Image (cartoon, rainbow over all chains, first blue to last red):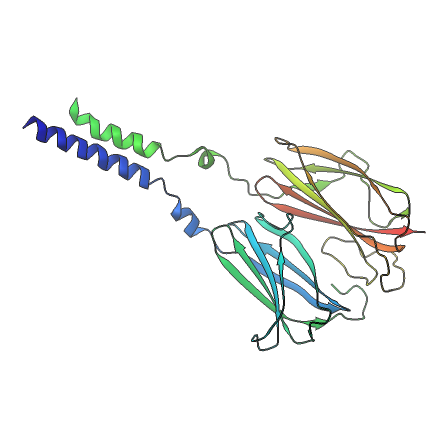
Length: 142
Length: 157
């Protein structure tokens, strides 16, 4: 009889410890963290570069950023650039993201699509896109 | 006594879940770049000469802890703007860059700082294109909040 009580006690201890350890998992926190948000400001052709400007918020912190240029239909990829600058990675927000993408000899034309993909540390990804325009001649164009 | 074992163990197991990270107050604000109490350099429309130094001087503050900053300088020969740049400076005519100045440097702020005066002498190469430039300061706190301060400067011959 004592051994049954002992075994029951041990089983209870094991259950409590298991419950305690598994409840420490922070999956719920990660799941509830919103995906990044992107506001595209500019995707302008300026000679042999595209000037990309955006503002990014990433409550899960930026982990990877990729810029892709495709044709207007989004079917043919013309340029891909991974942005790895330390000033843009590991951030809760990027105030004034500003990157130049070289396009010389890539056949990029006005009307192509620029896609900005931001992945956070939880693996959540957001893609924003903007039709590529020509830099305007007017002064102070942002 | 035995009847208290299980509630006690459950309490211990649950309390073990509260990590020190969770106990820290959440940082919800971006750091600040300011000129309060100092002579900030550079400021909008300031003119420097090739071969000279820019004696960078700014005050950084944060409510929890500062992290790092980046200084980047690029030409503004195409008259573009950034969200915080002044548009009041007189710009030279647009032109194509030939040998523009490009500067991009990261700096780490020592741990535990909530206020930090950043000072650097940044040498302006003597052989770069003169003209309008943007001087960008990007400050990040330890949590990952970021603030950009963009200044319009001119480099003369």
